[in-house]
Image (cartoon, rainbow, N blue to C red):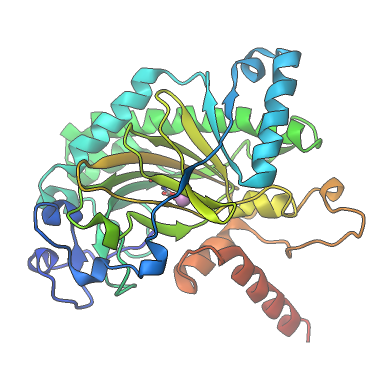
Length: 372
Ligand code: OGA
Ligand code: NI
């Protein structure tokens, strides 16, 4: 998921196109040029435009929040169909104050439009999941994404992290992100109740499993792009986490590959986009789908999105509930922990649509060699 650059990155290199180990490309600095550097080029086969609009249900959470049984049943049925098909749905009446949503998007715009020198003070360090990152070629020399990110991993105060990296005056901005993450964590548990009901494992089963969940919160900033048809904001991937809750501003860009075609998810004001990730797919033995998606960029306006990635805490074992195994009793994945999957994506595998399959293969190999 995340990549990192050494803190010693030479700023001089950043705006240049020379490719060396420390080069970081900053799309906000390239947005006004007529063309984009070739490191941002993606193969034609991967940049075909979307051909439709995804039929993602709008799930009203009012019922689950107030305990209204008839409304819950209706929402659960719609949720199940979406999760069995592509894993994407929208939520409304989610109980999160519009001010929190808007303010977080505002603060993200404020952050990304600051001078590069300031942003580099909170640059993501090697091995860390928190901080600022541009597109850089330390790990990957091609297919760079046209975006900048600011990420926070659970486990510390975002307010303190912003303050200590950027100065005390950034603590209020940190507090806004902190409040956002707390609101999202609460929402996660309500969604877990619905997911539990929809899979007939009971409303508390996933709620309890994720009660102490961790998270990665990522603000994505996709600047305008002079040649949007050549590149991607976020290339095709599935989310390795359990669940993603995404706030996208009112600019189109999110697309899902399902039914053999790329389909857009249009922004609906006030709603949040939720999708099943690989880890949850494994927890359902593939009954629910973690679907490939991407974010495209455009010539006319920048776009912000805030992703809240839900991850199982530490060494919790990810394993499908017995009732989801089916009549032939075949488990599709070996048991694993989030830490193992995270290590796999950081050390061995650039996140793409095959992450979970490759990870499971590696686990089986390691398992068979250790039992020899
Ligand atoms: C992601 C993602 C989509 C978007 O960050 O994993 O899929 O619209 N983002 O930014
Ligand atoms: Ni994603």
